Image 1 (tube, rainbow, N blue to C red):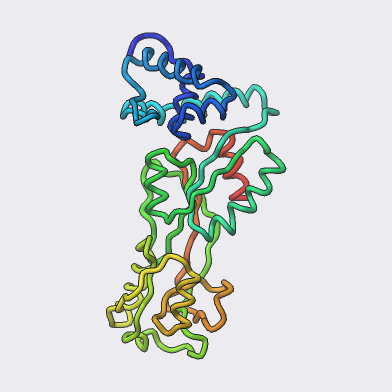
Image 2: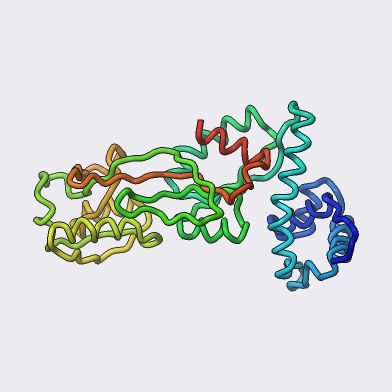
Length: 291
């Protein structure tokens, strides 16, 4: 890298390119021209002394060096914005916040937050991507999203990375979903049943196997399903039983029996990469989620 200082405006161009994937979209987002975006990134590449983008068909993609610089740009621009807000506390946060989360958290937490933010901070645009926790963590690590809404269970806790900042959102007890005609019975009585687990995350299967082990059997996992509504359908059809949240409006014909020894609790979180929450739009989203 040469001795010239990097222009933070050019860092913003690179960061938006990493997020949006197209110089044309960056130009539209920032109210400039595609040519200006291209020239700015070319100038930034000269400043750091290495190529930051490479051809990808008719588009371009970031080089490994470009991705690394884009990651640094998040923290640099957040610090610059934080300094600006220290001098101008009335400044309105604005920008695109990308959120990856599981469906229940999107419905329960994010959608109400988006409604409030549309009124209080109209310059913030929230883009929603539905993913299970392991997928969301991967996107967060690659800086493809700014915020991950994830969950774990008290019997299968998450392993947080050293660069994760984690905020508690809410928790809900889970029970055993069975056909409505069935009554509560010892867990050992379900040893010969077919079981349904999540197809996109391993946590609920870990909980099931722990409960079964404590009851002295190995569960026969037959179906792997992501949508809770489809789990309901399989239970009603007599094709298996599975863990489901209590208090949820399950399909008629499904009963969710309590699990108390031990209690099974799902815990929801908002996860960001350390230091990124200083970016005002992300901070506004987090404040609303955790209020």
